[in-house]
Amino acid sequence: MTAVGQGGSGQGRSEPGRSGHGPGGHGPGGAGKRDRSKGFDLGALLAERGGERYELHARHLNHQLPRMLHTIGFDKVYERAEGAHFWDAEGNDYLDMLAGFGVMGLGRHHPVVRRALHDVLDAQLADLTRFDCQPLPGLLAEKLLSYSPHLDRVFFGNSGTEAVETALKFARYATGRPRILYCDHAFHGLTTGSLSVNGEGGFRDGFAPLLPDTKIALGDLAALERELRKGDVAAFVVEPVQGKGVLAAPPGFLPAAQELLRRRGALLIADEVQTGLGRTGDFYAYQHEPGVEPDLVCVAKALSGGYVPVGATLGKDWIFKKVFSSMDRVLVHSASFGSNAQAMAAGLAVLSVMEDEEVVANARAMGDLLRGRLAALVDEYELLHEVRGRGLMIGIEFGRPSSLGLRSRWTVLQAARKGLFAQMVVVPLLQKHRILTQVSGDHLEVIKLIPPLIVDERDVDRFVGAFRDVMDEAHGGSGLMWDFARTLVMGASHGGGRGKAVGNR
Image (tube, rainbow, N blue to C red; front, side):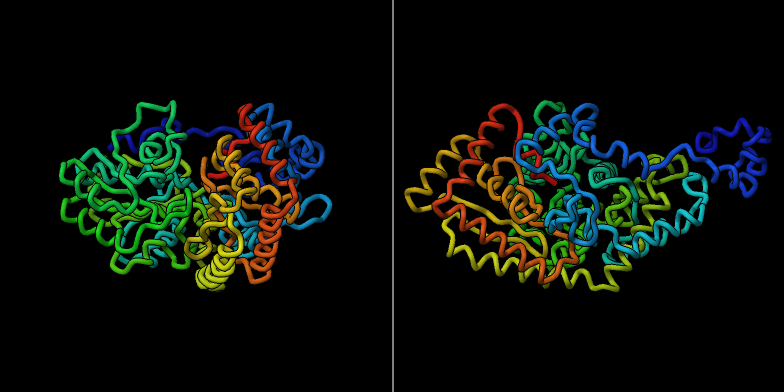
């Protein structure tokens, strides 16, 4: 056990300015000097350099991001945000139907979460000492577990992909088996382990070798049973509603899959990174199916209100006790920033707001309203084929029209690149109506709506009215949208403006 406590060679050493009591320390005596430091002024820095935002990204970060944003006309400059809206420098308001890929479940800058973060910073807690047990992680774990009483313990990391990585590791170790089953079109993250269970080839290309895991179709019980019979499967990881395409597991699939897994000694992992915390109208999406009790559940995104990176893996007691089986294994799985006070305080505040403001019920009600009003348009617009989803996770799918004029345009577009029509709808929603949406995945003619869970009827009215206007233009005599499609085709053919960059979780 000496390895856990090593690093104390400086014990008893006194250094000027390091004791916490001298003029340069971090105790009461050093606070005045620290507060007088004027070397960094965030407001002045942003005022001076904020206008360089796109140039800085092009020069120092992912250079394709500004290129893509310029190509599709998404290169806006947003100045401030609140709730489900943000504003540009001219004071124009934009409706957010994207929620930062789902992290802004409560919208932006909820006052309760902001206050909690100010409070935890002002408390000057002895955070991340690594060799104590702070109260906030235990309190947040207790609260999270109250929503899934069949689970017992929580590991806190920093992201959704890290939550999935934890579940994969724990499942393999607890069962002593190597293989994980996952679904076609699944998205579980982009680090190497979670990439191994990513059902989209475009993300996997060029990153082999990955873990030897096996893909099945969502809803294919025969394939699941066939793979389980081989005896080497540790777990099956599944999104109850897939983010890519907004495809829900067929009714009865999850309970039946759970029964097959239990019979063969394998685990069920529910990836609720995007669907959890009320997104689908229940706290967890797997709760739509009575009797489903996953062995491990992954959450992240909305847990901190969009402020602090956080992820959590909830699991059964026996799994955690198998992994952390002795004091020698106390740090066999850990995260340097996991359980940090800011993330834990934000998570507690988020869950409090969700209960106080009945956020899950609002997601269910507004989701039913929005999905119902959009579904009523399917018979009105031949390019609109289906509206599906649960709660405030909605997919709008477009398809081949029947009339000759529209069909010829559609065919040309599909020949150039599948998915461009959906992008063609997303762009005027932003440019003309100031509504931010996303394409649901590469080569998919699907728009995904995942707005903040606090949207109201006025927001629903605004979106439906704007969507009707865009559909009228697409079906009418105007060639503006189709002219823009040719611009997208040219951008795609030169390596820029790809739907993948705009449309994934």
